[in-house]
Length: 181
Image (spheres, helix red, strand yellow):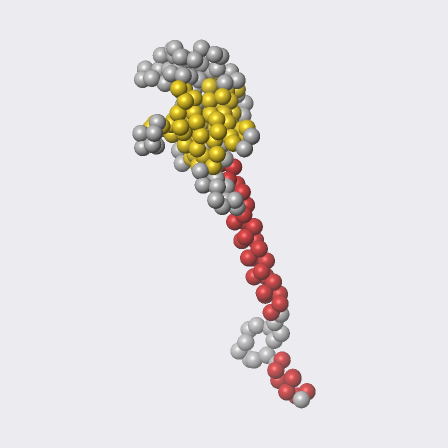
């Protein structure tokens, strides 16, 4: 029986591998590689999710205001934190004659934004629905909000305001505020 055991462990003359291999090390190497792959996947997802998060400071489409989107109760709201100018959204962009004469600073322009599809709690929401207030005409519109990084690596807040159904509406693009503003 000892002679047979010696034959099993003897290397074949054409075999370049060592006579004794350690399959447990080979398997653990694959397991380690799999763990690294999973960790990289989760890290990539974690890095991409902040880009799609609407919370933070944004500069409005006309550049007049900086609005901070933050939680307010169970929803997200947007409040004016800085005023840069008073240009109209109308073509030509002259001075705005706002229907709402209250000061813009501290005004809530976005309110009651909740996730559109919150059925899967393990997935971060990508679209929110709420209301947007237009200071120029004093009206509040229904609005869908998403974040896009297609045109700007820092992100753009896409706000699609509408009356009735979203088909009849207008989209504004707000850009993330610079950290030093």
